[in-house]
Image (tube, rainbow, N blue to C red; front, side, top):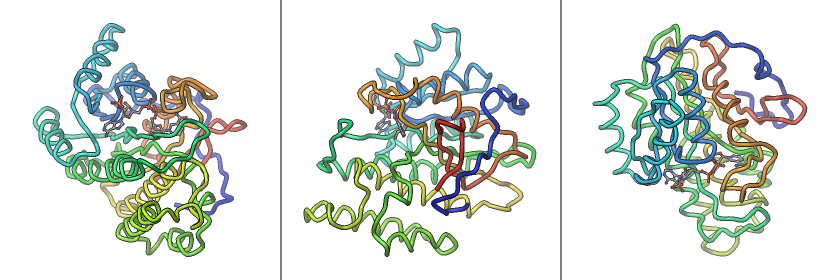
Length: 303
Ligand code: NDP
């Protein structure tokens, strides 16, 4: 994965470009945090395209209501309760999933939180934000890795829904930047040490002066960590015969509850592009990329 900040390369064709259908009803996708917003729209899109989709949500009532809404549209999706910030919930979900489906082809780590209004920057809930947005997807991914279907014709894939707020150019701390740019040697423990440093700064009230991202700081740091972990994971599988591709996708400013309904496009529009990325044919599927919906180019890769 190129981590150069000025890289700006179109790497997938526009959304209206047809992609050849490699999947079937046997193809199993999991989407987290899918009772509403972009996650819900992703489930709908994947189900419309004929995959077997597991809609997960932390709240049983909200999750089942979402499944019911899709059933009323004629779509058949499955429900699994999953709080990604809770290791017990992850274990229970994975046990249930293994018994019910056996294998997974596509994991979309979508669930996340931010406790800030659009122009606020409180870090009062930083621990929850980091636990949910970084440790959550990481714990779930590691628990599901043994269940990924391995076959050379249709690479398994992980799509981490991230944010451009967590791009490296938002980080001004030179030491941390150098560490994150050293992709060959970057380790998970370094990422976790960075998060501990951030949480310590929050506790000490020193987070404003230490070069952390300026907008939605706790959220941005959690996504920075997620992007970096995605690179490590992509590196782990790159070149293996039984490839799992790992990419990040920023849906850009989208009208959901996270943004108080504000945004440049709907969740359905963002999900149409996200689903397309998740479904690229194996021979067109990159790994270790960060995709963002841009204004001039429908999708480009940037880090
Ligand atoms: P929403 O707030 O609409 O949806 C977030 C979803 O995550 C909800 O279903 C929520 O469930 C769920 N969730 C939160 N915490 C947990 C948890 N611990 N376990 C399981 N599920 C949880 O936000 P969006 O749809 O906008 O966000 C989707 C993704 O897109 C996120 O990763 C976000 O960071 C990213 N993104 C969004 C942008 C935007 O402009 N909207 C821009 C860039 C990135 P519940 O209903 O129970 O709270």
